[in-house]
Image (cartoon, rainbow, N blue to C red; front, side, top):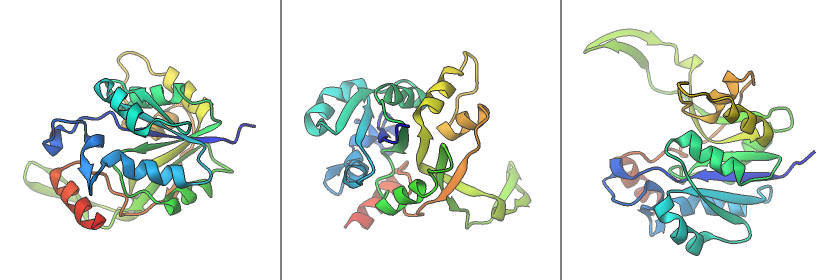
Length: 220
């Protein structure tokens, strides 16, 4: 059985909500492109064979020039996130893949290890953190029922899959289907059980300029 693991870093999103004219993954964080932080972490992990960077077409040549190496492959992303992941899957021949968002620069070796600890008995694993806030439903400006947060988790990346199973799940997507917001949803739709590996609350996703400012402060 092929036990090799590649990491696919999805870096094809725009930086519009951050107010930048360049794609989000290339926005500077503490003097380095955002994607560099997670790229370095995965390359330093002994269980990761190589990393596949999925980037926008206009950034491909620059990405290859800066990051391309025997252990880093660069490919073009799609219009939707799932298409970008699929393109990364096509570029890999590993038995297993980890999918990670470039917008989560605080991934650690410990988070990766928490997934690997579960990998012997699951082919669909995602990192999660507990919900600590009180969560309520609402209508317009009126509060509704409070949801039991003990039954909720915050879903993050990296996520781990048997590559052949995920590839087959992508092939099941038909025109008109609701698009999956992550690959775990797609795998569950195709009959796979998703396993939780506890992650790190600091491995947050940079979406807004406030997130970027917080990340800058944490990197100092």
